[in-house]
Length: 568
Image 1 (cartoon, helix red, strand yellow):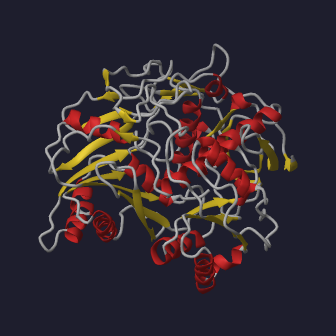
Image 2: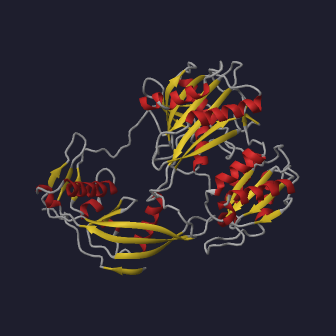
Image 3: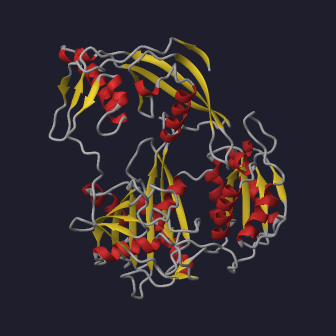
């Protein structure tokens, strides 16, 4: 802890049997009562990751809450948790005066990851009294008070407990503590090749391609910044050994190792020359090139463009600070990606997907827009599209990405990127797909999607007699459900008329973490029934190459999301 001033202490109002409350915000479901003499103090919060240092890294809301809770537990007198409400972003509301300044907080990140150190900076903003709700105050101040009350009342859950009492706030008894109960049904697990009984599988004793020709291109050597961590020389050997341990046959020694530095990534001509040299040195027969980077860098996209579109090298990028830890979890993640990229698959479906049993080829496309998080207001948003490249296996994907102005929600050049992927499919399979099933992340019911994205897609691909049928499905990422345990994989929540439902597809061993995903069919030219679409989505979730169990999000969207935020 450093450079802080002020002091903790002071009691909150609203305690005791004779407290007189006023009421505001009454509705048919809830109302908030408050003590008119109470003061809500607001503080501005800024949290930065200090160690390991990663430039341009934003702290997520979940990490921010973890850091705040750690700080409050270390200094309970200065930060009495029962008198503080933190929104997980930039605001703390407090019933007592808090110390200001900068604090260092070290948070353990689990047995596979080293602890992280953060700076937690707190500055006072204002202290609006609740009595000013009765005065002719400016709308901005009124909004400030009401927002503070909302954060406080939500910090204790539906009935408002100890925290709300310190602020002199009470929440109406109209809100039920019980979660909404819904009627569900459970789909049967699909038949897999090879057979697996428990919804999870491993790679052991499964024949696959032998990775004989691989090399390492290390951009983390000769560091130019103090926070860059050079790759440890034992990493390639550990990676190969771990691949073999998982059943992925890989030569334990790469063809060669070449050291470079991060500056090369900023010079297109120099990077192109380096990658061309690597390609020639491997006699143009590399199966995979491992590219090690010291930090996130825009050069990642250039590497992909040069290697996989211009030269013809498959690449797997990784971060040196994660590689250096030599942890099984990260090595397994890399091993599964490498296996997928050289043409292997962890599992495949035994039967064809429902309602797709005619002779026409089918391509599955997923789209997503990834926006910078936290306080980053200048970096571009990244639109990404992923599409399946084989049928009926549906376990190999290609992708395209495009930078957008910050905060842009519509996918620019959607039709153009989809056309490129359809052409890639046709080049690989000698035939264009006759059916397109398109999953668009982040939307549910939206006329704008139908008039813009769908029209853009049709205009781009329908030409020269080519006119595939299209189904468009809106996807909203997983929603937490269940408080006594997990709901089983294959659970369908479908209580409405039409193509609007939740599907729980993943097999998560951690209690109370089941997260069904919301799907809504926006356009359908294939005549799917609701049950057929649900079965198709559930079965697809068993075909994700980077996992050995079904995933929570339909794979075309999952791959698109990974492309929008590809590292580490």
